[in-house]
Image 1 (cartoon, one colour):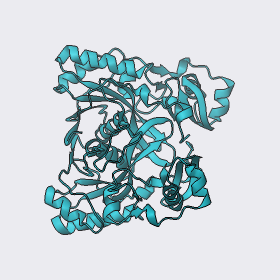
Image 2 (cartoon, one colour):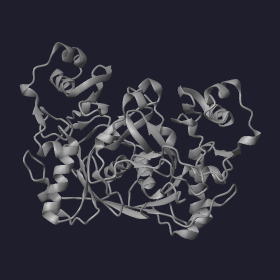
Image 3 (cartoon, each protein chain N blue to C red):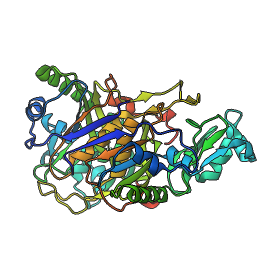
Image 4 (tube, rainbow over the protein chains, first blue to last red):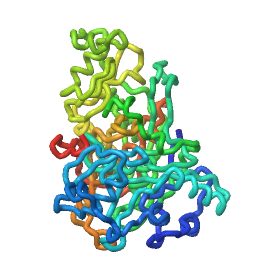
Length: 244
Length: 244
């Protein structure tokens, strides 16, 4: 692996709106090089893709009203239910769900914070791997550089406090590094060592995002992680998930 | 947060043995500055602290023999049981356990890979937060620099493929950043946003550790994360863990 890499926030982006050309905005602020990984917080992608929904137009079902229990907006709960393939845990008004993409996270990724106005929420991108691939292509067209793209979101996790950013979309990146069958320097065979590189890169980028200062994009430079993985590869099938 | 930071492997360390002075070895190879975070893979700490155990002296219980089921060394399973406060999942010969520290991980952190000779295993440090604090103090004595220390291990996790490195020990570092009650730029109050900074730093360092080339130490420079958190803060009490 690389001996050194850097993570740098891309500062100066405007408040993003549907239809904004993220590749144009980013390349106006930073110079990308071959092998860089551009890491983008989910909310930036969702906003330019129009995944911001006004609660005014939403009708809450009886189930949503019950889960909201007077402590949350039932229309927001309805959107969480709509985004969910499976409810993993419900402790009203909190919901942990498996999204249609297969990700298990709080509120099915539906997020109200950082949204302009209090009456809208931001949904996850419809297909974050495709979002990453489109952005990668747009960056290549503008700069000629072969850049990887990772789309991240902040997920809680069982057994450990706090959230870390993980990859929910990826393009042009080695998402998982397999060490199956390799031998370490003492001759011991490394069985089934699988490193979730894209999640570690996502977490590294979060360290410069900042939650309050609107920096949803960072450039990771110096890692040798070119590849063709997708964040969907990080979704583990239930039958092989010993931790579940 | 910081606009940029770097992660650099400390290359050139010898194979570590019990009693080695890790602070002396590291400061001979790199120049530390105030505010740096030295990230050290658990195995390096365990080796210098003598947490390497020869299987020859271990007697396996009936339970260990049963879990081993002819597919694993029952003496290794016995050490896993000895390190466990609770068995979380057992699918012979695989065990996921809560360690005495409260960490939930495969094999209770007992690891055979990268061990010189095939007949020894490496256990987690007895008190990784204390290990981090001792190393931080030794580095300060040698260099005068106020350096944070994070001890990491590679953990699997439910619902997602692969491992990421997380913090199992910390000293002089902001382990969790709380955003409770703060307001984002649109006025929305950020309820209970807790970022597991130390886990994200651990994962970032893993990206330069490499699995095969014996680089268990990295320097993270440029992050503003001085604090007094402990990795024990990352262990979430069962009753507040909605994900469990």
